[in-house]
Image (tube, rainbow, N blue to C red):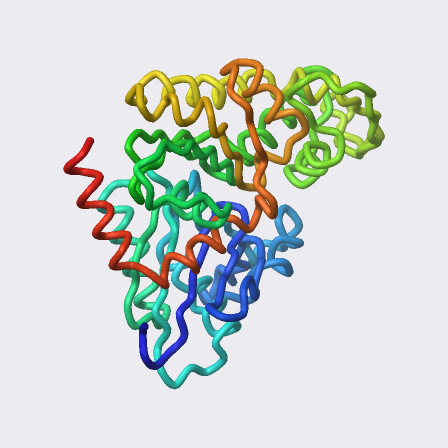
Length: 339
């Protein structure tokens, strides 16, 4: 369809960048972190190597996450990061690639322009944008072209995007800045309050992944972590259990459920009936916190399914959407006329 040059789909996430190349699938999955030399402004390293430097760098090096809450917070660093990843995937391309980048559903025109400009500066020939829930639905294998309601809850690092999709686009949608990063913050805050111990964001993330839950577990799990005692200032070992994490995540998980209920309340009746029948699909790394599907199912009364390969759904959908940009635009016009 695009003639010369590669077609690339990029899931530009707050926590992780995934790159999908047409015909090859997901070829890159790296943290959205860039290590910058303060003196020269040069990017020293990007991705996993830079993530290891978070909280551990000397004065002249700073490890930056250039995206916050799903949008670009540092334009020049995002551009450097994109340039690095595109070059890593394409090599020294003779023909500039066509790129589709996914964005949260609630972004402003200014934020959209920042993404397009950053991708163009990084070497793209043409840039398309796609909303995260649409990309997630395509990646999860849902046929979005039908006049039939499907509900997707995509929980990433910076945002949770919820949308009811019909005729190739979102009829009702909501994007909240509560997702993986906020869960990590809530865990660190809770440990500080309950145990008077300060833990780093990577430790909080490990707790979330290994023993985290938002719905009571059948069997309680425990994990040993190291932190800094706030009274003595010395390093300390601490055993945390899954009930601690359940309590820590109560408020943030409730905000996600409330947002899902809010979208359901605004959904046209015909589409609500479709969703009751077909269920709610969950995608993104955030939905892998134990019990999220059970929590939403209990509160909504609607069956909840976690998509296969939920972490890469958005990137796969972004890449697949490149096959039929015209169809998406046509369906968008139809949907606007109908709803």
